[in-house]
Image (tube, rainbow, N blue to C red):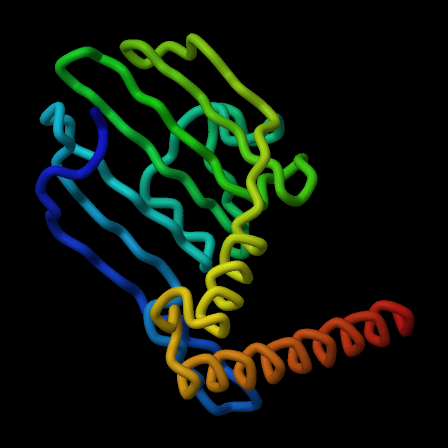
Length: 180
């Protein structure tokens, strides 16, 4: 009953990273927000952020941040929430990584009129394997290409540069800390 009937607005944010004084952009990698009206007339919002910008906080995200959103700008907060205001029901599904959980573990929180009624945790969540499966199916000619080769190479190169910068900054921090 919560499958899409009418697709609404979609918003994307580009990821911008400063690498050695040069700005690098990854299109549509910072955040995505999609709205739709479900078959049962519920309004659905899907939102994910790779930058730690938590636009919609739902209680029960993690043990450490059960009632209050994490303030760390590097927190990855991934949630799919269905709110049916006519019934007073909210179902929030949190996708990995979740603070305090292992990789490939998510959780679901069900609220009735703002009160938590059920928490299902952990649940299996392996989006990396699903993405890899789509790529393999493309090479087996079983589906369309999930990402163009040019965009994929740009992303790989960018993440490699980002990783190197992060390692450099971590090593520099360790050296500075030792000298104190």
